[in-house]
Image 1 (cartoon, rainbow, N blue to C red):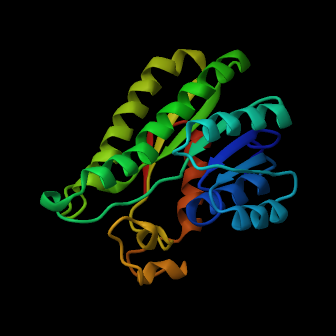
Image 2 (image 1 turned 45 degrees about the vertical axis):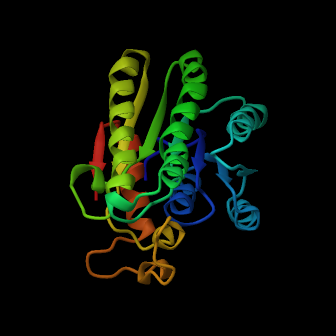
Length: 234
C-alpha cells in the first residue's frame, strides 16, 4: 500500500461489520485516522478497540441529528475530513407487485437520502480544505435487471445518478466522487435485508464460488479511492 492514506481522516458508515469494517481496517493499516459509524454499539466499540487512533460514533444514518453529530464529532476530534465512505445500506427483496411502499421509503431513506445529506454536509468542509474523496458503495444490481430486486436496485440507480453528477459538478474543486459496485459478497447483508433470508449462506463471511469476501471488496475500494476513477466493479 502507498502512503496515500497516511494521516488522512476517513469516515466509514456501516463500519461495525462486513464491507465497512474491512474498509476501515485497511484504511487504518494505511495510516489513516478512521471514524467508525454504525448503529451496533457493541460491535462498533469492538472495532474501535481493534483500530488504534480510531473514533466510534454510534449513529442511525436514517436520523438527521445522528448524521449531523457524526460530522461534528469528526471535525471536533480531528479538525478535518478527507474521505467519506458511504457504505451503510439495506437490501429489500420481493416482487415489484408486492413491494410495500413503507418498506421502500425506509430503505430509500438509508440508501439514498442519508448519503445525499452526508455528502452535502462534507462538501463545504472539503472545499475549504482544497479537496477530498467521497466514495459511495453502490451495487452491480444497478447495471442489470434481476427479478425480486426492483426496489433495492432502484435505490442504487438513484445513487449512481447523484454520485456521478456530483462528480462532474465538483471535479474542478478537487472533490472526487466515485462509486464502488460490489456484486454478491459474503456478509450479513442478505440476512439484514427487508424480506431477506435469515439463513443466508453468505453470512458466514467465507469465500464461495461467485461470492467475494468483504476483504476483496475493501481492497478494490481503496484502489478506487486512490485512483480517483469514477467507478469500479467487482
